[in-house]
Length: 172
Image (cartoon, rainbow, N blue to C red; front, side, top):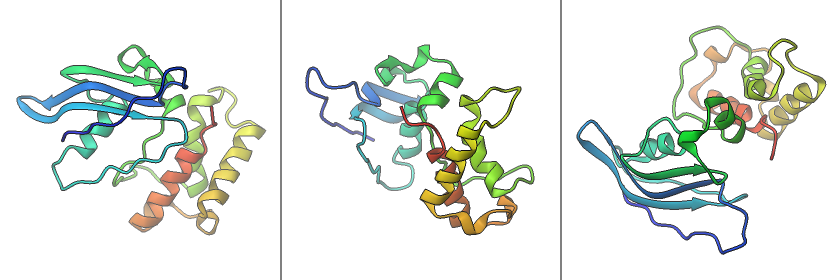
């Protein structure tokens, strides 16, 4: 996969995600070659391509799960390889293509997982967290699924719940 996008003008806020000259591979099999990409605040980007083109690998590099063989990935101007997983989770949410859930959990509990990087681990959800969860559920339109076991949802319903999980994160 090869992608080239514009870089922001001087003086502009740093991109939320930026890839500079990124090449990545799994063992000896290249999956990304010379990727330059900048996604600014508020931008919406669609990554489209055939199976095996490198779309998921691109997301893995952007989220720090796949280290580039060459080039660098940045998250809000910081080199992603220098950030710990909690910092990355506070700045970036990725909704997986398909997911299985290994445990029973209600829809509202699953959406609440989006708040974990932002809450006190000993106190649980604060009122601000509960409000963000409710707002995310409302914004995505999954209120009719409340109380249901997320494992029993259709794949499309589960995707919407996972999008609500991502939306429940605080805006920066």
